[in-house]
Length: 189
Ligand code: GRF
Image (cartoon, rainbow, N blue to C red):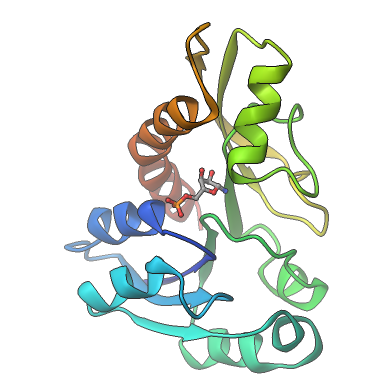
């Protein structure tokens, strides 16, 4: 059995799609949700699906062994970042190496890096008058949004699009592709 941990900071709609995707899997279990925001809705979603969750501060992530100890204790094999806003510290990136995946709501290498998250990304895409945007699913290294790309999918940006409508389109793409791309990666372990 592959045990997955999902790191998220916000609503957790991607986390929930992943939980649902692997619900009846005989090979993969979403074992733990890790979150740096005590009031994030992802924690409620975890509870609704009877998935254990832990919260931690930025300091605990970077300066203590709380998070890596939890990963070890829960025998986590693979890490998914789904709307997680902090940089993964070196000790976790080293330990999991190619076994951490992230989703970014734009076509990297454009519109990535520090500060490029959530609405900021979609606003920047619209301001740049891009005709397409999309999603990038990629490996994680110690720099924001710079790991090798695994998969991209595109969507048209229309003249009428706002950051909000573009975010909705992107979420649809994310929910459609992220769980099955994770499954493909797990098959290669
Ligand atoms: C997604 O758009 C993801 O690409 C980005 O943060 C958002 C998280 O959404 N990294 P949700 O919390 O999964 O609904």
